[in-house]
Length: 590
Image 1 (cartoon, rainbow, N blue to C red):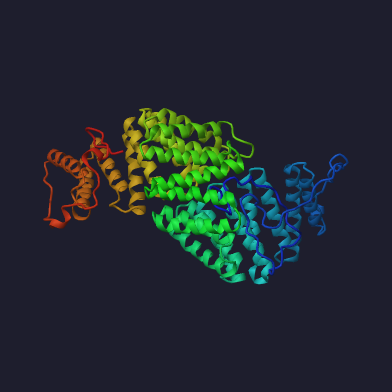
Image 2: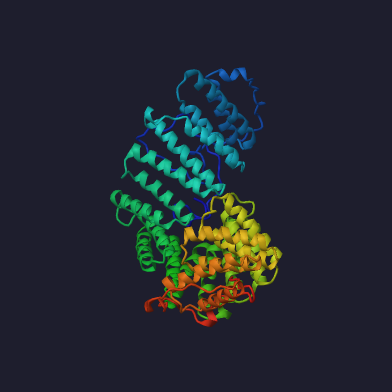
């Protein structure tokens, strides 16, 4: 899965390559292959290499008429031509033509036999792989959907394997298109087929469970990811030696999940066990990468000295094994910059930021755009927090430019655009803020994230930008959509949901819909009094705003007696100075 840092799917994975399957799927006794995004084809890689004179002496490609496609020998021959074309380095365009005609030939022959043809399914897998190598992921999807419909699992394990491979390849392709939910659905279907064919405890099932867990992490569905990762860990512990590389990879993913859920102690335990396994296997660079993750956990726990020690250990290893200008070194510089910024050592923090930026400005060969963009995004957050929004904006713009042509990065780009919108908003460039939010929202809608809490927050931010541009009607629509999403995803008592309530009430007030504004504010105050407590500083502001609206409407507020235990919010940590910023007059909350 792109975008997830783990042993199985490294962030510096190469772009998708074309690989052509052998004429028939493997028998069920061999390990079921798990397709990876760098290689969309469902079966083994072709190792053929062209001879020095092959391309010079090659004859013009033969011309095949539609009538000849009925020949049952033509499909395998065309598929071989596609393989040879790829191996000779002539480019995928010509191979695509051969693959299209091969699939048509197999389709005709299969229709004549009235039986599901694995050769036809295989040719469609090859066709989809070539489409992916050309960046035509949308064209690959129909081919894979057709390939999935061909095999019949009741015909044996070969058909089950072909269907499994089709679902996994389709999931990878949807992931590259940013369709995360559909991608996960494909992986789940593939896993069901694999479990039926191999059983629930087969090591290959464990690999697929882990793959699916990574997809859930990418979609921020951490509970499902944790369940699958636990299952993977159990399978690998049952079938592998103690402290195996597979178990280490599982524990690193589990640590990532625990960290995301705020269970830092459990995350630290998994990372320490993973580090011990890597040390036992002599994987020094992987040990250093785990040290960085351990440092992140210590930083979250405010154990700063231990975090510095972990980062410095990793830095020493990376410099000695990869060189002073490797992006891994830059990533540790960024973590140290964040640590020193949190501890108030701003001079040291800025120095580490500058060191990282020098490496990113002249990346060593092999550095991926995703690595550089990720580092620039993290540095921009530091500049933002030290009140340098213009510099943060420049870094975000550089990061987005690096990713704009990369497949599978729609959600990442949307996140960057949303942050750029916040930066534009902070410096008063509201039209640019609205444009950035609008672009981010369009990408999130297209990628199937229209029901996430993050999507609701971005809608709220765009609504605030519209208010500044006096586009009140548009702002009201955005706040209403954000309210519906956040109520569903976070609940009515969440701080983000309450903020949207307040903004929507202020918008209704500005539109003259006083009754609607009163209804929302009464609902908010009722939630605070009955469930959250009234010690929160926002309570008085909302109470005063409601009193003014009721006075204008000539009404009084209906109140019921509240018990004493509801009058104090024991969880409130904010003082008046820490209260959320408000726009005077209207009461909009950022």
